[in-house]
Length: 116
Image (tube, rainbow, N blue to C red):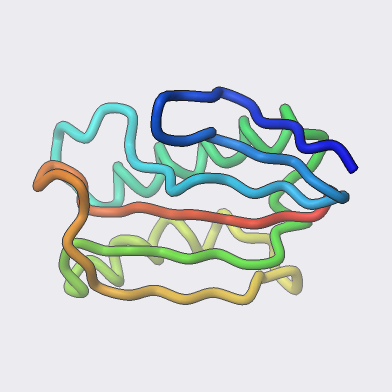
């Protein structure tokens, strides 16, 4: 079975496709200024859409999502973007936790696994 690694960097591949499954690395906002968690979430979801489309998948095929918030108080801001984005009736298994992120400017990080 082949492993297709895309957007390969020194530490991680942004996306790995294997055996009919798309694995995305944790995605953070491309431009985290302003440090607004809703704006960061919107940008992250746009990146997820783009990467899944590149792989031949889409958000209707997301199996799981793991979301990290630098402060759990951002939960409602996250969901203000997540709820209208995620397809009704096709919501993935999801975990959302508070965690220190790689840099203080990041408020949200999301990782998804999707089927092709």
